[in-house]
Length: 77
Image (tube, rainbow, N blue to C red; front, side):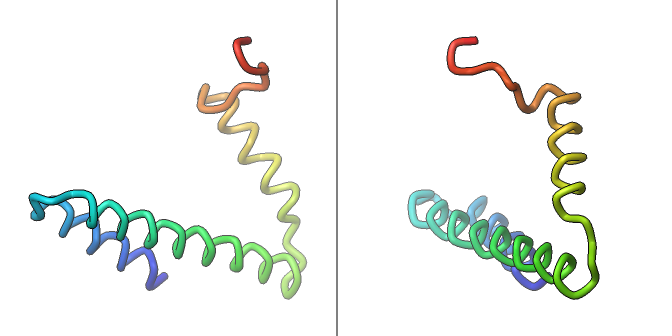
């Protein structure tokens, strides 16, 4: 995925720059490109190949819950 490579390059340049503000903005934009490409790829898998993306999402959420990265408790809970 080309966007992931661009993100990696941007992160590497971030380390070399003393003024991080503009570089962090570029990282954010590249991250959004990667996210959009990943979502588009999920739709293609579902529409063209019949992949159960809803099931994949359920499995992913379960993994995040198991690792403690996600909680079902509401705010303050």
